[in-house]
Image (cartoon, rainbow, N blue to C red; front, side, top):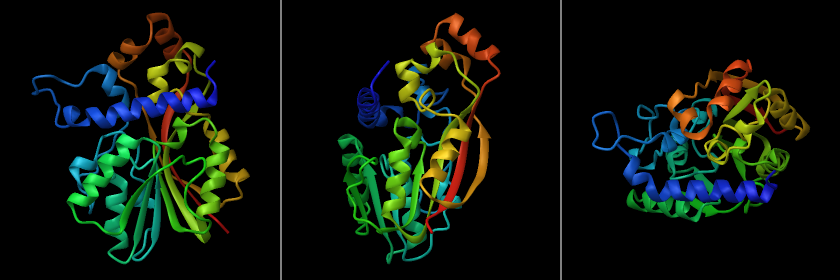
Length: 270
């Protein structure tokens, strides 16, 4: 059994490698000379189509989200928005399109490689009101009462101490501020061999917790008006399962009457 710090180190390593290899993955399809391997598909099986959203930048989209949190975030012109696990900047740039020049966007990510990519993307476009900070979202390097809105896309479920994260979200939000998070939750008990698998863990799947436990953590952090805005079933392709799991574990998983879901949830700080 891995410790919490070992789990975080594994996720940091996997996503840092993804940041470095992202250029190789962009644009891969069935017509390409080298289709994306099952090992890489684990990162992208839940991804959403951002391309029609205002502010979308293709080189900032690594395809590792599981929802469209900015669509439900109610971001207004002039807002200060914090994006947790900001990656290459995708959600930050879309949030910027909502806040306008008078707003402020802060992206936080613990992978220095992701921060470097995001900063390059922002500099290339001359964005002066978008900043990217290297830091741990369990201990955010920002003051109390900073944000009007906090967003995140398929990140919290990667980290083991969700209570710390929701307490931090509460701290950095202004009174009356709110969050909108897309994340992965489970229904039913999965085979231990499934949840212990390192690649599945870092790929947003095996680290997720039960849906009711997830909502309970939000309530314990004293948020109000908690609402699930959207639910989507996540189906793991057979080739991804076979890449990471043996046949016996796959059989247990398929017979287990378990579900994996992407939810987008909102809540308000009183």
